[in-house]
Amino acid sequence: MPFNSPIPLLTLLDLIPPETYEWISSAETEPSTLIAWISCSAASSKSGDLLLLAGSELDNTKLETALHGAATAVGVIGGGEIDCDNPARKPLIRFFADPSADQDTEDQTREIHQRLLRALMAQKSLLLERGANIQTRLTQIAARGDGLSGLAGAMREMTQHGILVQDKRLTPLASSPSTDLRSVWNDLVTQLSELSTLPETLRDRRQAGEAPAVSSEPMPGGLERIIAPIVVGDVARGYLTAVGMLGELDQTDRLVIEQGALVCAIEMARAKAVRETEKRLHGDLLSALLHQNLSARDAHLWAQNMGLDLEQQHTAVRLAWEGASPTLRRLETLVNGEIARSGAPVIVSSLSGEVIAFCEGPREAGRPSAATSLAQAVIDLAAKEYPEAVVRCGIGTPAVDLGTWQLSFRQAGQALDMARRLGERKPLYYMDLSVYRLLLQFEDHPDLKAFVQETLGPILNHENADEFLATLEEFFAHHGNLSQTAEALFIHRNTLTYRMERLAAVSRLDLDNPDTRLAAQLALNIRRMLKAA
Image (cartoon, rainbow, N blue to C red):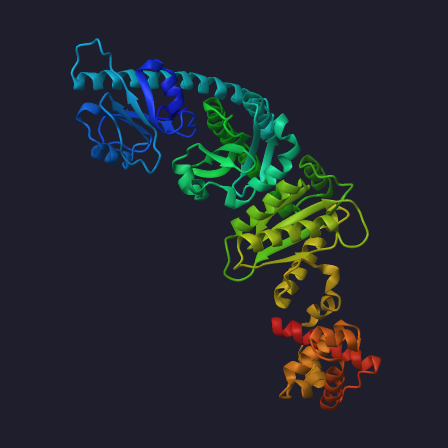
């Protein structure tokens, strides 16, 4: 605990004889007034100071000026009646010197200043010792490998209040509710996961890391909380919170949160170092598998040592920012954060501007649900945190053994390429590419462009080309259903019928002929692919 940490004013006053002071203003149970130092100079006092003024030399105007100053509380030594404005409702206290002592005003001020300073130092020394004991106990728990969950449980036992550990995005990492809050704890955790609930002083993570401080504030429902930043490398990497009934959180609770934040920082730094090592190993394994640099036996042993269940299927997911966007590191952080939140077994690495993930999941028919869920969650999170940027994603077919990882990876790359071309904002699964899988093999062949021109040329050269093309797109998307097509285009069915007649006259396409319809739909797909490229 830093020696300049503040002490509750009420605690400080409890350390001196009650007959030596009296309250003039502010409630005697004021819980939020914290004192870090005793000052005798109004000019040099600052927030956290208890400013002492000699009452015999003080008039109401000077006292009012002092109350408007930086000091947190003001003490008047002796003096007469006080009647001044105190709009900030700062604690105002009168202190009494020993009436039997033969002392002048300066000596009385010095005596009371020393009395309060000795009490302040004694309390800080006591808290330092108590804080060291708390840190030792928490460090021992961390050394056992109990992780953040074990630390949260220990702090709950120490404080008898609910404890919540969150990451920098306020995602809960560990929590331990107190008995009296158990029934509402999930709602509280949800509430405290909103950025708007974070104290203003902690929202700038760099600033919070440079000058970490414990904050107290009331909460709805007759509750209050103590919160401290978890600082790693001069940046707030998370937050530690204690929640209790209003008026029940005390200095010991502040100590637990203060020391707990330090130990949580060590635990988070250790966990990050482990993750970085795992990421390097994942990258090495992926590189070896995708470049087929390992024998089947070596690949099998390495994968097993990495904790992969080779009885499950593994699906390639490739994600990339679109255009000028945040760094690849940011995208990798989003992916790893979602993996940590979901607990899904995934190995991740970055490669050539992409984040590559292989998602483990049960062998199942159809779309790989684990890979799709991860990809969609990352896209949604990226849209929330970086609304000006776009993430494109391609998913390969599941690999049922290590020998087919390369195929799944290649398929995911083709799906990612088409997602970019088509502007697809959802994860694009390779099997959904349909005819594009074939067209991609011939996209540079001149016959493709010729086919589009032969089939759609009259429409493309018409003044209403955009309207006709959009109509055809919706017509095929709704399998030729005129009512659904009209609804999708926001026009009346009769209007659509008239437009289809005009389109047929211009294009000379017989859309009642299945072969013609197939040719037109294929031409539209080729045009979309070539235009995107």
